[in-house]
Amino acid sequence: MKRYVKVDEIFHVIWHNASVFIKLTLRTLLFLLVLYVLFIVLDKYMIRPYLPWFFGILGIGFFIKYIIDFLNIYLDWLILSAGGITMFMREWLFEYKTDFFERSKIETVTNSQNSFWDKLFSRWNISIKLEHGIEYPFENINDPKREAEKILKYKAQFAPGTPGNKWIPIADEKMSIIAEALSEVVKEYMDKKTEQENEEENY
Picture (cartoon, rainbow, N blue to C red):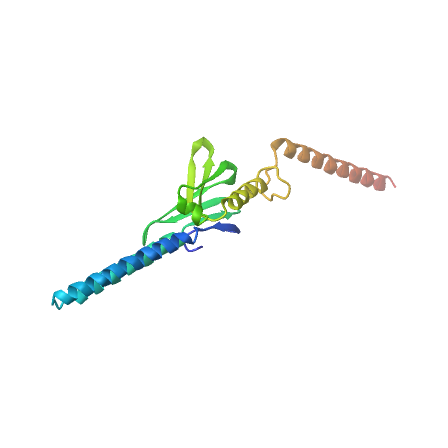
């Protein structure tokens, strides 16, 4: 993961639902089965020395595509970290897209189901809406209610002014009060020290 995304202190990672991989695998197996049946039929009625090579290369090529598609889905992440939220989407073998946004920019987190298959496999789409109406969708996940609660929980945890937040900013007014108090303490200490030195000189 850290090979593609540079984040520190990862709290939680959201993945795709396993049914997405099942669909991709069944589709690939079905295609290879049809390809094999077609080869058996053609090989019976056509005597061509290159026919096995043609179907063999076609089957291997499709299997390689299956592996690439599998990795493209498997390597999609929605990462919650100390710095914010990172959405990593792998689009092809050497192509990927990374979006980063701060938790403070999150306004709402919504989820939806779009088909019978979504209900059957209990998979949902989640959408994170930021300021100015910008939305980041992440499709086919498990338990969207729990994931949405995690996102909002981390947003609240790292919000300015939250107890225990190690990145809480100190307002300028508070800083001036602290500086004034410290200067008074130092001034009082210096006055006492000067007074003691004067008394010792008198003796």
